[in-house]
Amino acid sequence: MKQTNQVVWITGASSGIGRALAQAYAAKDARLVLSSRNRQKLEIVQKECISLGAECLVLPLDLADSKDFPARAQTVIDTFGRIDILINNGGISQRALIKETPIELDRKIMEINFFGNIALTKAVLPYMIRQQAGHIVVVSSIVGKFGFPLRSAYSASKHALHGFYETLRAEHKSDHIRVTLAIPGRVKTQISVNAVLKDGTPSNKMDDGQDAGISPERCARQIIRAVQKNKKEVLIGKKELLLVHIRRFLPGLYYRIVDKVKPT
Ligand SMILES: NC(=O)c1ccc[n+]([C@@H]2O[C@H](COP(=O)([O-])OP(=O)(O)OC[C@H]3O[C@@H](n4cnc5c(N)ncnc54)[C@H](OP(=O)(O)O)[C@@H]3O)[C@@H](O)[C@H]2O)c1
Image 1 (cartoon, protein in one colour):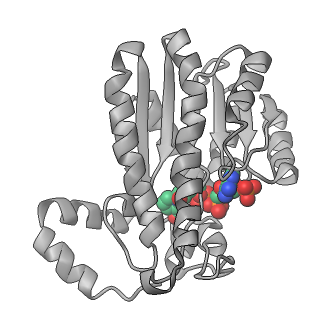
Image 2 (tube, protein in one colour):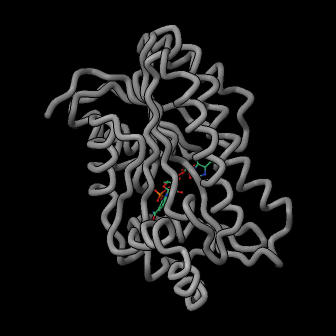
């Protein structure tokens, strides 16, 4: 289904789920804003989107440095006149035990995955209030629903997003601002390769679980469907999602399973 020239701003658009979202929205005639740190990679995605017929602005930003976000939002408004959908997708994961992770690294992960994420939303929110319309999509994770070894700050940052955006949904319902929390399990992207080790360097390793995950294109299709249906939350993945339901309905069984998990 084609869908109308909506202005869709995607963070983490240079890779994985964000790139697949950009391509899928391009095929729906959206006007796209592509953000992440790496301009060159964004320009490759821009070319792909333009070849699909979309208008497309590359707007690099670093989620760890949010001071210019109001100016970035103004640039989008100057270019396209409005912001219909903001997809807060950019982020980094972690592969390090709590006991060996320096607090500076915990703060860095929180800065990128939580504070940077909400700072961009705060920059966009006044325009959505003025429009009396808008949809904010947040790409969380199943570890935003429960903790998991080696991902302490990552899991905490995703949990924090749930609290923030459930509050935003409640505060801005009357402004017709919608919120969808997308909760992927395993998606075959570079997330584990880019995940930081205890010294802050990337793991450079594709996890077996990641490798067996669903494609980013499939993940993107499910996120877009959830946005169209105004779902408050959507779980995306394969059998790993069972753990979310077990955690909720059979917590005793959940803790027995987690005791046996070999962290990777
Ligand atoms: N893949 C999975 O299994 C999975 C599961 C659950 C949740 N997720 C979530 O899905 C989202 C997308 O990840 P992905 O799987 O597509 O991984 P990915 O391929 O590693 O993509 C991550 C994206 O985030 C951007 N990014 C990283 N640090 C950034 C920063 N400081 N400032 C701005 N952008 C930054 C990267 O772009 P640059 O390097 O150009 O900045 C890249 O575009 C993440 O929030 C992740 O937590 C993924």
